[in-house]
Length: 304
Ligand SMILES: Nc1ncnc2c1ncn2[C@@H]1O[C@H](COP(=O)(O)OP(=O)(O)OP(=O)(O)O)[C@@H](O)[C@H]1O
Ligand SMILES: [Mg+2]
Image (tube, rainbow, N blue to C red):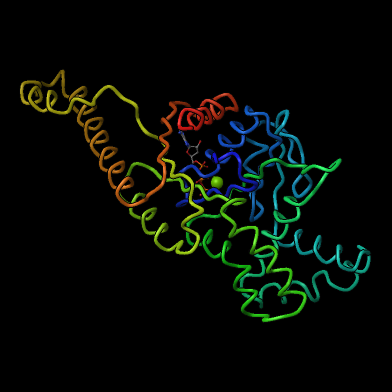
């Protein structure tokens, strides 16, 4: 079963390592494979419309490119959605719940912000149109590491807190989707540097019962440079220390250091995580266009 046969992919990793980039690349690759894909941002993030140069619609689903849609989930919008589903009249929500009750309540119940956002993803997963799922795949650009983990465990925390009753029931069905390895996969993103790699191995450990859901680790921003033969460079280096060559020597030193660091990252991840490793190249450009993102996505095709 491939990465793209799940219903939901949660993409997480340390801040700034390329979670949003990888989420978009994975989504585009799934579209290329003929799937209808929803790219969900959480915590009110709105990177995707910007990346695809379209106008976002916030919590309302909007198209990024044919076959690919997006929305930006906030806990406030998700809770409103949930309560309106229960009471069926939005005016009542506005009258009774908004601000006066919901604000303090949401903040008082641990994990509720996270739970309602997962609840929205759960609803979207169940949505059907003409008898088939509206979305073949939902890619969630999840929060960074620690928060990603608490978000994933929010339904279980709510179940413990409530013990029984309707809240407990709701949390249970949401929990069941996100702990089912056949339906939900986790993709860990990291960079070929010591700290992010250590944090990734550590995150994998902390995932505990969710480990079987980790389908892939993405080693992002690999410099696919021509400085691999380190030995030859080290032999030549002492002969090159002349003023005119200094800049080139410095550049090559950095490239060699980076190549070695990348090798270390690779072997540490291979030893630390029993999951497939996909490498994405560093793209030398300022803005990652949809074309560049789908170029990255195709690396997943090569990886299988
Ligand atoms: N393979 C790559 N090649 C070149 N630039 C990249 C690559 N991957 C990511 N970037 C750039 O690195 C920056 C961080 O990437 P991105 O926003 O995807 O990270 P993130 O993990 O989602 O960050 P945050 O934790 O802030 O949400 C962006 O400017 C992005 O364009
Ligand atoms: Mg991001």
